[in-house]
Length: 360
Image 1 (cartoon, one colour):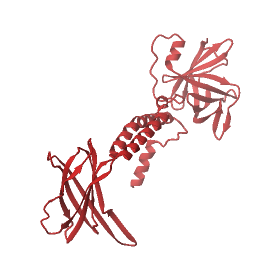
Image 2 (cartoon, rainbow, N blue to C red; image 1 turned 90 degrees about the vertical axis):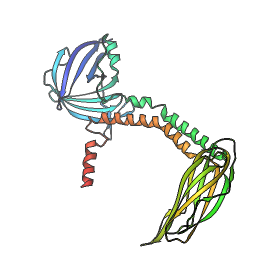
Image 3 (cartoon, rainbow, N blue to C red; image 1 turned 120 degrees about the vertical axis):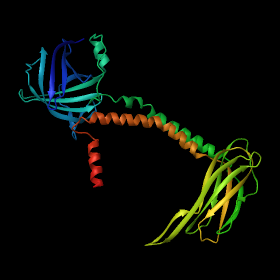
Image 4 (cartoon, helix red, strand yellow; image 1 turned 120 degrees about the horizontal axis):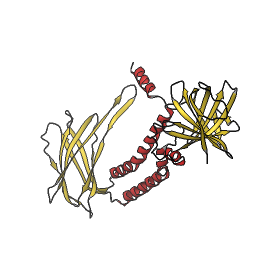
């Protein structure tokens, strides 16, 4: 149990103010309760200076990163203290953080004294409850320097659960792909003739077997060279006359200009999902580049193929919440370090300036 015996308020060079309550227990001695914008930190004075390792301070085996340096002065004081506190008493401050902990160095030029302390973040409700304050505490404003990142705690389980679920999804998808028939049910070759009427081509009927709706892949290939070929293809159910329309196109160009080059492809495919079993035929309407006498092309239909879009949709749904949690966690850290003299994040203003410079 402690008693609050003193209170003082400090102000830094930027005009920010915070309060420091001095707590006392006859056996445990003095402690401090620091409050700023609804945030609370319980502080103990240290006997020894924390070890300095490459600019970080080490306490309890954990590195504390430098957060801020500056000066502050007392602008209000009330009660009793273990030294004579004066208005406008100046203090040089340096804070190092490892949330929920904070290490603070205080130098008193007027007293030729340096002290170190360690603070731990407290929920406002815990402070009000401890002192029997029956009203609700003010809601904390912003992200405080040693406030634990609430989004990091919420996402802690996701760090191991998400990879496990993703692995299960991959295994299930690979097992599903391995169980597919991948059966070729049509192989059709025809010619596109430039300048001819090129009436629609109707292929021979073919059977799509199985007992359930399935993915069907239609593949177009043609040895076009420095040209293109496009085909509108209707997959027609011979019994119900239901039509599934797709368009396939191939183009391939090559040449020599400071070295050999090529672009495009001589084959293309499209997946038609959820095709019921039954008897089908294709109606093909080809179009080609003018100036080509005759362009042969080949159509292949493969039934019961893996629909990988389902895997990517499932993976996207699985990753949506973890990505959201990571973005919230990252945004909280950016907000925390926005008030730091040692922020590891590039300010948004610098992004804008850099973009404008690049544009110029």
